[in-house]
Amino acid sequence: MNLSNLLKPSAVKALAHVTSKKRLFQDLGEIAHSAYGLNAAQTVDALQERESLGPTGVGHGVALPHARLHGLTEVVAVFLRLERPLDFDAVDRQPVDLVFALFAPKDSGVDHLKALALVSRTMRNPEVCAKLRANVDPAALHAVLTEAQGVQAA
Image (cartoon, rainbow, N blue to C red; front, side, top):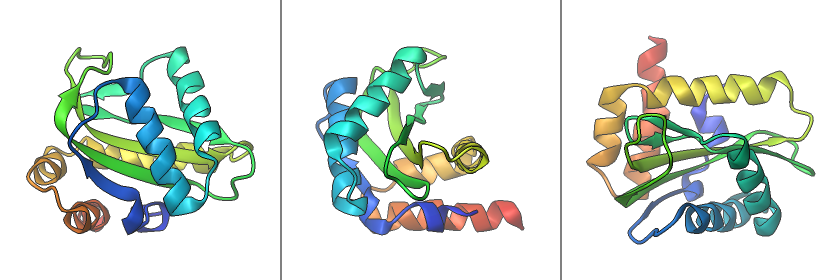
């Protein structure tokens, strides 16, 4: 499993004005709809339901929201770089500016966990995060993410 299989270039965006976690989830739902054909409302509901179990802000300005959805056949991802950090109830109480969301089939089992571990490893790399924060071009962001995995594997 690698990030280039999970993350389409069209699912990578830099957003200037996200004012709340709710708005962020709506943006994620809209991008997941346009990139993968997911039902935006169902996606937002699933993200909010998962977030109610505990915040997915993992620290150092990174959030990894994720949800399982009916009708999905494979794990897919959306990445957002926020121009203005957003309060996300992260474990370190720091605002979030890098958001890597995963969507998995309802019965995905181990694939969902493998994808989450892969994304988590990638987003824990300070060099990757610095490069992501230095770019606003979606193509450059996608390249940083998909190339990061190759560097880690070497």
